[in-house]
Length: 555
Image 1 (tube, one colour):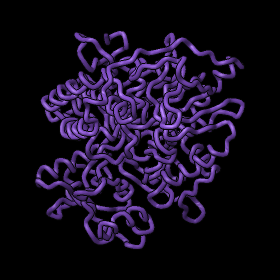
Image 2 (image 1 turned 30 degrees about the vertical axis):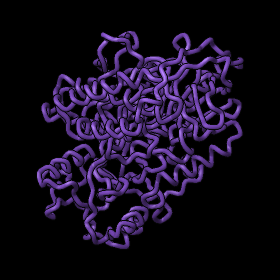
Image 3 (image 1 turned 180 degrees about the vertical axis):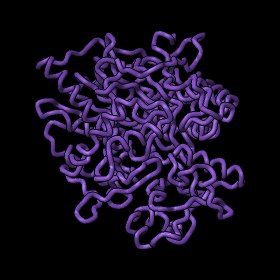
């Protein structure tokens, strides 16, 4: 079982009524749906999922299932880069220390050291697979971001690192004859039998329902940013993997820790767009609506402070000035350098008649990265046998209470590779054997389509969490959020929907309940979790993780 330090179990709802949070979202009879088989099943097509798939040798069959097209993932949209000790003046101990400092007392030192030491090899692997990182004099160009003591961020195409990395990784996966990819396929629930994960129940518009059986399952479904009104995440990031794992009986932890990126382009009526932290790494200033550079008064590292500190400072300054945003100022920097370093952001801002070399760019924080998730050990094993997890859906212990910039792509690579190694060792030990279909079925629920305006509830939920579970929280707001989500859940979770919109809403409600319960339990401020009623860290919570209740605790 994963080692997670001191744990504080929390039950996200009352036990005094029938609960449907554990089990399957829809009814099915295995005699009436198609069956498919794989040795290794990977749910999610971001960097963690595809790296796991690529770690499985050709003697085993791999099936990758993606909710949207394979290129649509948080990994694809990553701008800043991937952190690693590549410069001669840098040291592993520096990267380790920076990660632990950013994590505010909740990092697992063994995990941090493992990931940091594997970083150079994983970056070299990406280069071998065809990733074209930006270079200077024949060497990988390294940038610096908030919380890092040295320049160690490898980037590509200026500010489009994720797109370039995923291009190379997807191309590599397509070249592997043992790897199949099902795109636009919704994973509804993990299949479990006798305490072990056996596969997944899926749906798409062509196949309808299907059961996919596998000897090993890797969960790599990404994050939960779409639970918040303001977010950098694409539409797919709705907490599906977190909710599926919980329903299947896996333990989750640290669900209170949603990281808010400090700088999201804020223009009324436009979609929200991430503006990479590397902009501040190149020397940009943050100014308020009066033109005052405010970060030096909040943190000694000013604009290069860790993300949690910058986001909270921006929120405080917006409240102080009663203005809906602050502004990035790059006007004092070399215009040619800025346009060359950030071509994607330059193109984006020009569509709104903004010149990033001269104009102040309006920004505000937005939900960006889910630190909490399915508890995993050093090999990516979850508490549910047969299930591994990697990337943003997992809680590995790397990030603690606040993720250090550009450690996320790195974590996905390392844990994807680790999970694959562990799975292959297990399959090799077991030897060749046919997959058996266990006697799994599920009763149906009440039809829910006719009575629920799914889109309306979804947007109400996102607005509620932004107000009450956002950058700042308190007991009163959390209680309001818990009450409203519980009321929605009472009539929506027992229903049976027939398409992804309904299943997604049910996943979002369950993930929200887990997050609110954990935030209520952590009566302190630490990292990305800031409570106005408990504004300081509490030693009682040092090295303490809030975990979900065991399945037996829920009726």
